[in-house]
Picture 1 (cartoon, rainbow, N blue to C red):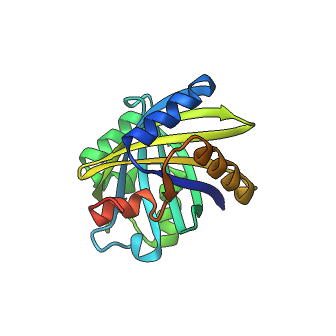
Picture 2 (picture 1 turned 60 degrees about the vertical axis):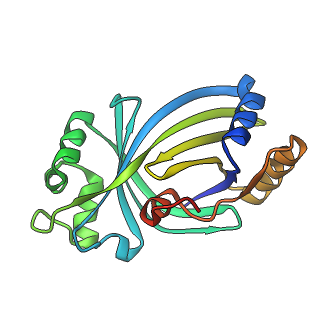
Picture 3 (picture 1 turned 90 degrees about the vertical axis):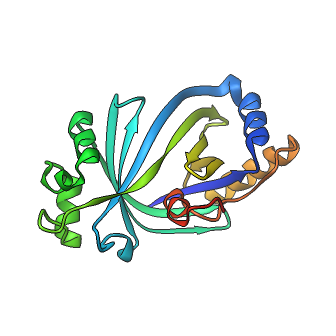
Length: 201
């Protein structure tokens, strides 16, 4: 079970202000394309699960993941996640023809078949996705991820931090944002839910 603090930044100006302040602590910048898949009858989402392919830095790497039972309360997100690397070329072929997903050699997709009954005869469809720029900062012994997520209908900005001490981290981040006059709120929806809603929360 992953636990992550998720705070939404008000706008592009707040995002720029935060990343400028944190710039001395920048570790890496990752550009991602994230695409989601389900069956034509929503087998996975009806069971509070979602399958995704995440392409990093223009197909330099691809991660397939299954996330289940997410909860997001007061800026703290809990979700069960299992993931593994896939060959980017094979994964990109699955984007062009989602039916291929059921045939690919993958521990994750084997789980999806066994636990959800999604085999070749059922097939997958692509539900769309988003582009994301993730800047990772090593700050106060934490790994802060500042996201700029571009949907077809708008752009969302978030700061995320995975930690077992989520209450302590949330308090630390809130104090830091307030001290620097950076407007924020608690994230109310996970990215997949935002995508499905078709509008920014």
